[in-house]
Image (cartoon, rainbow over all chains, first blue to last red; front, top):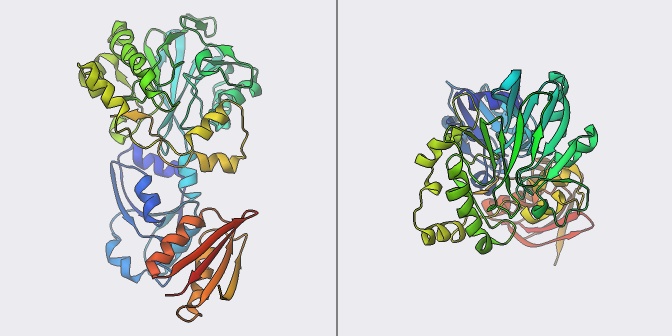
Length: 374
Length: 75
């Protein structure tokens, strides 16, 4: 019997640290570049086109005592292979929509309470490592670093009975397409962007300047902007309710932002250093850092959130503990990991200069996010 | 280039382009050339990997108006 798994089913396995055996039937390059990560997942990568004559040869490598999920790019090949395995007497499932669906899946997880009954949610896009946020208070919502699947946010706000009033991006993203502008136009909310990142954008926006504060509802919850350049020249952090520090792509749990995705690594090293080693040092250690990405599963907490005290990061994050400025410069400019897929085109989309179809946007976003230097 | 056979796999989604191509190649003799026409972009990398796994040679490939043409010489 062939079981159809949704991306949400797989997400539960990841977050709950369950076991899963993944038979990935994409070609070796695609698997090597990007796969479904799980703490207790086992993998076998055999391209579907090597199984056209039958699956007998791989049967001994497929366990009988755990869930087996066949995965491919979109789903067609995984159904074919899963059916062959099923005919050979194995109980297996396939991932509905394949890696494409995995890349799009988003889990909203509550991070914590805000003053006066408010709430803060983190939207974890497991397949791509993107993190978005929604702060809710007294019937109003602010969304930060929304990804392009705008329905996820508007539906969530409806379920919560709140009106989206403010949509903010910490910077002009290069690894994924922002949903911010579209959510704002659908809901009548204001869309904020740091002006230094928005020099080439072709739409109207509200400038996100250092020190700007946004009042959410009638309560005293504030979203305060802190100019923190380095990943891009405009990169801005937010302090929410004096409890949470949203760092965008400047500081992650186990790594720091890379300064080269807008093409100016050498110029922005000093800004990145200043932000990480001076601006952030002046903030309270007790703030909970909430980044815009995670790179590896070890950055997830037990409840699936990606969040850690700033004080702990100062003690543990390697990127915050490089004493020598020259060593730091070399770390963030030399031997950087490959740049994200189609990052230049993605920046153009986020500036409003090009408007690709949904299918083209999906192709652009394929692969890991790669925004960090470890 | 002497094309022995042409396979129209336009509009087919993965895995069908490769499945059809394999079947057709099986019916050819060693050294003969198959022309395959596909529109599924996902097939691009798969064709290269499939051909090299089976020892076949992609002697040419081109794209015209959204259609990808592969010329595959059977091993």
